[in-house]
Structures are given as C-alpha cells and as structure tokens.
Amino acid sequence: MVSAYSLISTEPGKTAEVFQKVKSIEGVKKAECVTGPYDIVARVEVDSPEKFTKVVFGDIRSIAGVTSTTTLIVTELYGENAVQKRRVKIGGKMIPITRLVNVEKLFKLLDKYARFRPSFGSASTLGARGAR
Image 1 (cartoon, rainbow, N blue to C red):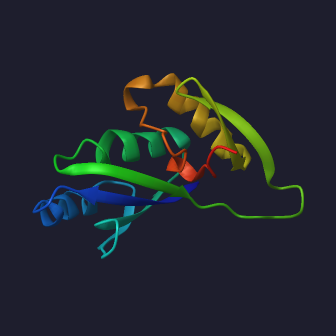
Image 2 (image 1 turned 120 degrees about the vertical axis):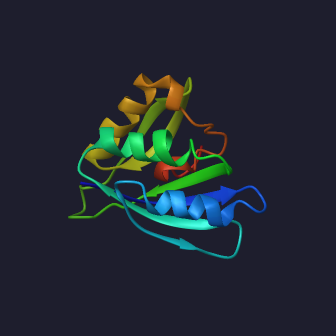
C-alpha cells in the first residue's frame, strides 16, 4: 500500500475545476481546497508503486490548470532499523532520502518512466528530505 498527500497548486481561477477532476481520480481518497501556498490537498491511497506513479504523474499532473505538485509519502516506523538513509538517482542527480523498502521501488519506477519525471529542483517531491 502506498499512501501520500499531494499538495497541488493551480492557475488562478482554475482551482474549482481542478478540484472536481482531482476528486474523481481513482486512488484519490479525499481532496480538499486549502489556503496558503497550495490550493488543493489530496490523499492518495493505492496498492502499488506503479499505480501511485500513474495517479500522481499521469493523472493529477496532467490536469489542465495544475501548475505544480509536491508529494509527501506517508511512512510508518516499526523500529530503530526500519528507516535507512539512502541516496537515489533522480534526473541524473543523487538525492538523499529517508525511505522504506516500497519507496525505493517507487523511485526506480520513476527513473524508468522519464516522461512522468517531475522537476526535482528542491528534492522535496515524493518525500525526499532535500540535498544535504
């Protein structure tokens, strides 16, 4: 199971239209309009990294009016050794992340499907903690 929050920014005047489309996407369990630097927060829950990639990068990001997304993957800690510091190669750069096993599969999948690859300028997308 992959669970995440997708923080969505929209073009001015497009929030209501984007919101209706996001709510109708399979895998989006809840979506709400918010104030602040983002316009919509969507809770995504799917059963595989492949479906997660499709929902976030194929469905949400392809909606007309979406200007950017930041995705925060939900993790569960089961013990001292459950979380490991790792680096993954994204867009030709080594990015340090905190990960669980399924997240590593997700990043490998993202590298495989370059057409869905987002801009990782801040490395904050998909729960990465940023370059150190």
